[in-house]
Figure (cartoon, rainbow, N blue to C red):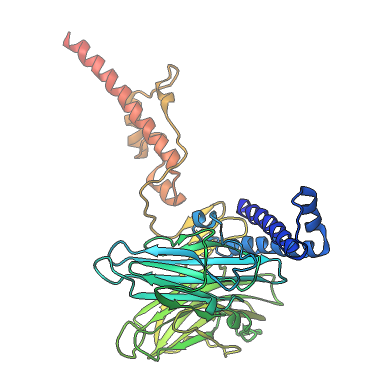
Length: 479
């Protein structure tokens, strides 16, 4: 990650020097490319302003990666791409930054492209492009489902377009300013693979093919800027339910949902409750009905999934939380919404001992990462001393633990118990020597795989020695 930041900074320095040298040429007809002149450009008032801006862009790149750290494809993030420099004549022209080609039936290409760019002008461009191109046919065919969205950007959706030519789809951007290089990287990919990124493509005055327009969404800003709160639990309303959000199914096939981040503390405790609720309620029907697909997850939280529930009443769905502390108020905001609409957060709702009538949806603990690095999956608080605590079944193709061998059994000084002694131990204890009893295992609840594997291997090697001794005795009897 830091390597990528350094790469952005290096490119920012090169870009700034090149852009300002080009600006100098256009004004004075000459340029110095010496190392000293480059330093002067960066340390001058104007050069310092631009260089500082580019450093800020590099830092933005870093924090974008931190924001998406749990879900981003690292191999995509490590690949930084760039457009050619618009120079003096290529502003407001189109250049290709990404593409995909349909090669099979039902292919679904998608990706998220983060970009930022600056040049010799006093502004820089930034934003995120979300693209999806799907072939809903059994054979390779031109895409018939597509979307192109520009999120939280100042470049304008009119400057982002896709072009479909038979089986290929290309994404273009148009850079409004001269002497500007735009840097971009892909942070998410679709089911059928990432988009193919392109560097230093030529600039075009017009586009040819079936044009796919881009839509502009400043989606999260209106959500992030609105802070909500519960009422104060005072002295008697802790461990009672209060509504924090709701939504209503108003159309067929509607898929509502969102993320709600919350934190809260009060005057009676140093405990701070925090977490993120992810909710989805989908009506998978051609009619307006109650949702038949629901998800309610609690991530990175110490509140406990038992204190978060949803209730379905007809086409209305409400999300409730229960606050365990007295004199506590929880602040919350919605950070993401689904395509069909957001949840509707509500503030200062009354407390109730029980949930209203309706179909209750239980919440499930998702991934919880504590500040000390311990991780819990399906559990609020990992057990003490446990780095990864999973409440559920783990499925894997392979599990590796640090190996512990038992070859010491074959050492000359190893004291192998006589079989008579082993027999007596089993009669008295009802388990093998050196192996924990079933009662001990139940009391401890967990076993160390590496240690148990070593003990079992030890017993196998002891059995081998016993068999060898018995073989010798049998051979002697045969003589």
